[in-house]
Length: 115
Image 1: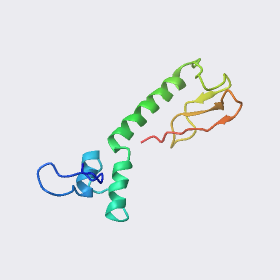
Image 2: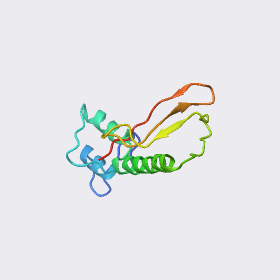
Image 3: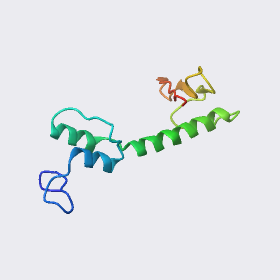
């Protein structure tokens, strides 16, 4: 990395391309970035790597599934006992969560699409 924040190629005397940066983050070559070269580098640099996002999503899905399968789910620290879980909202989605937090505010429903 040079003093301007650009990533330099380890062997060649040049800045790495947007595609090289994207590949190092786990983006498929078919993924497109838009804007100037600087914009594209910023998009890749600010992005959550797709493999990491997928792993986090799978772990969240497993946690929600575990809650849905328990007959008496353990209350979460930031939610009241009124929070509910359901196994399925329709054919396209798996688990959902809805309820109120400790301040009485409604917690947004979260749906995970099934494959």
